Image (tube, rainbow, N blue to C red):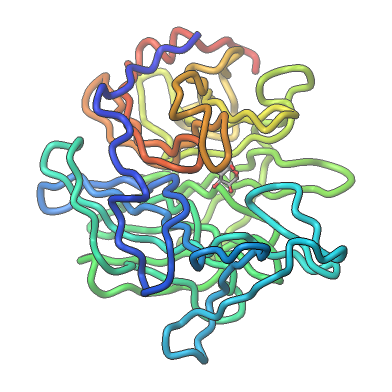
Length: 351
Ligand code: MAN
């Protein structure tokens, strides 16, 4: 059952609203923002996916390259080259080497009312160095004390990993490097300590054994992570049968930590559900969504760069209300509200 109340103004931000970071580039997609409040504003740290304007007969993409004055280098493949495998719009392989079809950076959009956003003209964070050559994606923004902690996906030939950066003022950033090595993504920090430990949800991926499951880890310093426990696996025959991954910081409720997550089925249809974790011991899963609480039903959620996707990694909480910002069809950014009580009522025990 879909219990999310979408903003009537959806989509809130579209690729046309965003100035490309360099001349000759186009914004192909906007995706999956991290969300926070700063100086009285609602702020989205969006993922902006760019590529060069495409030439007939070619597939062009970009990689981050610190040796170039522009910070990026262009790659082009002939579409009729038999060595090119391009089955998924998000990625391509050439002579056995994988690439993404777009290069993503993170960019801020701010708003006084949470509906009408002004998008920065320049990127906030771009990929740098060999471990971020294919860009930065899907940042969660957790506020811990007076600091904002960004955990985002760093993509490169080395794989998909979780990078960590912190800032107090959104001007100076401290990059802490990779927090979790490949293959790992969808990392959401808890915004307060539990029993003296920091906690995070993360999503390693097994190739043959295991799978893309949600795990929990703990730390005393936000840098060194251990105590890994698997919290939620994919469920055969259900809406989250193929992959699951955490959204933003779990929400403290009287019933437990409410962790919103995405799940995809074998057709890569992405929906949203939730886990309920014990307040004192978040390794204990108390309940889980049987059905998703939000599904791609609207035209803008079904059609786009990669259709049938609702994906969130950012929200704001105000009493019983969660305002969820989400990527729809990997193309536009939208908003919706949820009642925490209604989500809790929709969960079933003994996950
Ligand atoms: C992956 C990530 C997300 C994206 C979904 C759907 O989980 O790349 O950023 O939204 O796939 O394409």
